[in-house]
Amino acid sequence: MAAGRSGLPSDTIMIRTGMGPDKARQAARVVREARPDAVAIVGLSGGLAPGVKPGHIVVAQEVRSSDGTVTPCASAPLLAGDLRRLGFTVHIGPIITVPRVAHGSERTRLAATGAIAVDMESAPIAEGSGDVPFAAVRVIVDTMDEPLGRLDLVRRGVRGLLTMSRLGTPLAAWAAAVGRRTVLLAEPRAFCAGVERAIEVVERALDLHGAPVYVRKQIVHNSHVVADLAARGAVFVEELDEVPAGATVVFSAHGVAPAVWDQADGRELSVIDATCPLVEKVHAEARRFTARGDTVLLIGHAGHEEVDGTLGESPGRIQLVQSPAEVADLEVGDPERVTYLMQTTLALDEASEIVDALRERFPAIVGPGSADICYATSNRQSAVRKVAQEAQLVLVVGSANSANSVRLVEVSNRDGVSSHLVENVGDVRLSWLAGVETVGISAGASAPPALVEELTAALSGLGPTDVTVRSVGQESISFHLPKELRRVAGNSSPAPLSRPAASRATS
Image 1 (cartoon, rainbow, N blue to C red):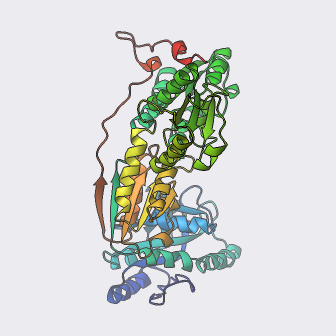
Image 2: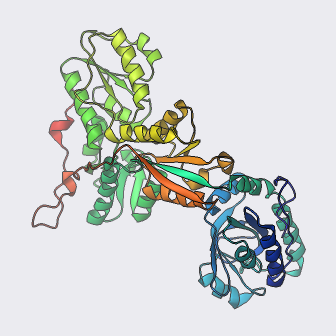
Image 3: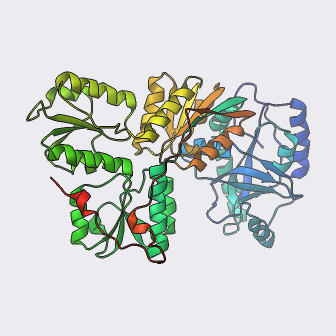
C-alpha cells in the first residue's frame, strides 16, 4: 500500500504491497531485507466497531493475525494525535488481518473479538518488521452498516486514496520521532493528598447518598477526573442555583467564599466541604488578619476559584496582587498594618518577586506564620527543575485550567528548557520529539498518575526507551475526610451534614 507521496523523508523506502496476504508476505520479505529503522503500513480497510464510519481513520493499537499473533503499536496515540490535528476523525484500537475479504456474519464474528477494523495485509508486514517501531494506519471505506456496492466502490475508493495522499506529513513526523531515548520522571508528580481527598469525597458521597450528587465547579482542575466522576453520577454545576433545593452538594477543593455558604443555607442544601485543608488555612489567615484590622494583600491570579474564595472572606479588606508591577499602585489604609497571603499554587520564584516588591513598598508588612504555597506545589516545582537540568524537552501532564500544572511549564521554560502542557498523550506533537534523546515528564497535582503511564508507554513505542526517576523526595501527607463523611462508630449512617459555623464567620 502507498504511504503518501509527499512529506516523507528522502530515505523512505516505498513498497506497494497490493491486496491480500500473499502479496503482503512478499512485501514483508523486502522489508526484512531493507532493515529499516521503522515501518508503517497505510491502506484501506473495513470498519468493525460502532462509530467507525467510511472516511474515518483507524490507527492500530495492535495488529492481530488470524493465528493469534499480536504485534503491539504503542506509539499509536501519538500518531493519532497528529492526525486529529489535521482534521481527521481517528479511532485507536486493534486491527485484525484475515486471509480473505470478510462479509456479513464473518464481520460480526471479528467485531466480537474487539477489533475495530479488518484488513488483509497488516499482520504479515508487522511480523516481517522485527523489533523496530511499527505503525498501521487504515482509511475506512466500508462497514457492516454501509457495505460497498457497485456505485460506492469507485467513489469511496477514490476518497480513501485521496485521504491517504494527505498522510505523508504525519507519517514523516512519526518517522522523525523514532529513536532511542531516555525518559526522566519527576518525583513527586501527579495527585497530591488534597486532590486524592477531594476525589474520595465525591466517591464516598455517591456511595452514601446515591446519584446524583451535585458538585459546585470542577472538584479538581482536571477534565479526566471530572469526566470519570460524572460517569459515576456526579453532576457538575457552575452555581448553586442549578442545584435542586434540599439536594446534596460538594464544594470543590479550591474553597468558596462565605457568601456561597449563605446561598447554600438559603436553599437548604446538604453541603459536603471538600476544600483542601491547605486552602482552608489561607482562608483562616485572611479572616484572622482582617479581623485585627490589617489590609490583606493576596498574591495570586484573578479568576482562579481559590482566589475568588479567599477574596470573599472579607470583601474590600483584601486586595489582589498579580505582579510586581502592580505593587506601586496599591493603596492601603495604614501602611503599618499590612499582611500578605498567597494562592497555594503559585510558582515559588514568581511569588518571591512579588513579596520583595511588597516589602520594599511596605517595610512593616508581615506574611503568614507558615508558607501558603502548598507542599505539593513546591515539591513538584523542585522535581521538574531537577528533571529540566538534564532534559531537552519537558512534558507536563495536566489541564489548562490547572494553576499548578501551568506553573510547572513556566518553571521549566524559565530554566531554558522547551516545555509543553498536555492534557493527555494525544496532545503531544510528534514534531516536538524529533532529535530529542532525553524527555522529562511531570504532572500537575490534579492529574491522574495513569496519564503519565500512558505517555511513557507511547514514547516507548518510538524505540528503545530507558525510564528513570529524578526525585526530590516522596510525599507521605494525607488528610482526613470531612466530618460529614465519617461514619459514626457502630452506625452505618454518615454524620449529619452541617455548616462549620465557627470557622465561616465573616468579618
